[in-house]
Image 1 (cartoon, helix red, strand yellow):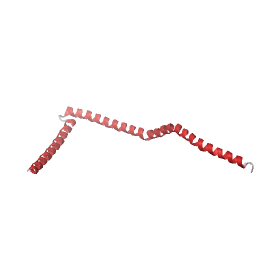
Image 2 (cartoon, helix red, strand yellow; image 1 turned 90 degrees about the vertical axis):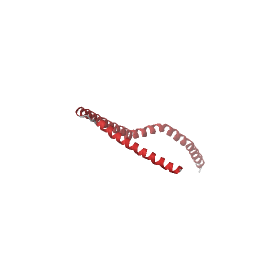
Image 3 (cartoon, rainbow, N blue to C red; image 1 turned 30 degrees about the vertical axis):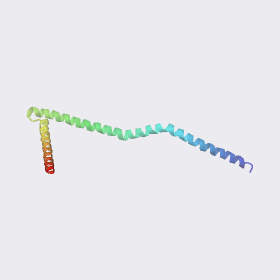
Image 4 (cartoon, helix red, strand yellow; image 1 turned 180 degrees about the vertical axis):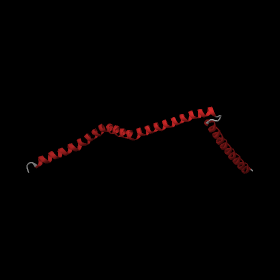
Length: 121
């Protein structure tokens, strides 16, 4: 019974000290740990996803570039033996597509101008 007030005072002071010091220590620890967590999470993300995507992109780009180069060398060899090249035939096809689109647009212009002419009468 004699020790009870001393234990009460000691436990109260200990609880007050913990309730003040623990949040301060936790806050400082989180501020110091945040950059390390950021670097850790970023490196995990980058190492798994980002770098794999970059490597895949470079592989695909290299394969497309090499196939275009091989196709270009084949078209040069073909151009020596034939008058029509691959690029010439592609240009003709593109020209036909663009002229068809132009004709369609001209048709729309004629249609809407006719509609406008009838509306104004």
